[in-house]
Image (cartoon, rainbow, N blue to C red; front, side, top):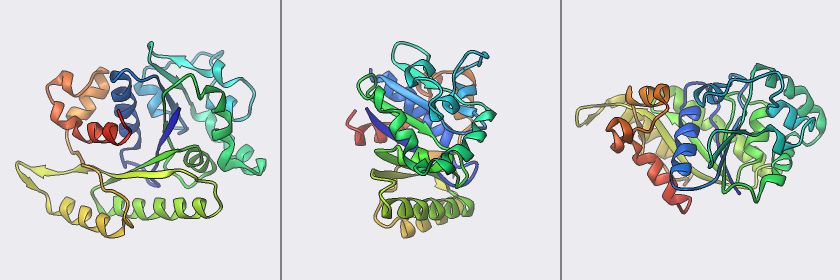
Length: 252
């Protein structure tokens, strides 16, 4: 199982959108995919239609080792499963902080699933927190979505700093798959000046890490999420190009 974490240290950067469409795209290619909602806001769980019962285990119980990880899986279909979250996940912060190995806890908890799935896609929270660090620490490949704006550039810088710090102490042993510009705005065939300037700045600070094709600003993403369908099903297959590029980099 190859684990891909979507992480960026600010809200509104496209982490959940990226995780959702990437996971579904991998499953559509016939891959067995585990998705993990590591954000207490639990947007990924909501978008995937997960309605938690009192008996359903979540990522919180997995991290605390109160349940076997296999018993936490919410099977969406034959190829797609989810370890969900709810707002109680925030209480895992103290557990991870006092464990003495918070950054590698999730990696260890997932080890029994190595042969059950081809890919794991993790939606990390936007804060520089124990939950974020254990999500990054679990990654073989890291995707950094960043809005094509000054806020997105700042988020990218902070995320790269975190990755560098974790790499120095070997808490992150994976690779950066790429930086994924989000909400790249075009007016017809002309890129908005703010987007153009932001992408140029991202290139300058990327430190040699690849800048992937942008996720364009479009209401079709929201429609696809709300309807639970692909962009291609809505007639907008061209908007899937960034995800096709990611799949190619992952060997799919």
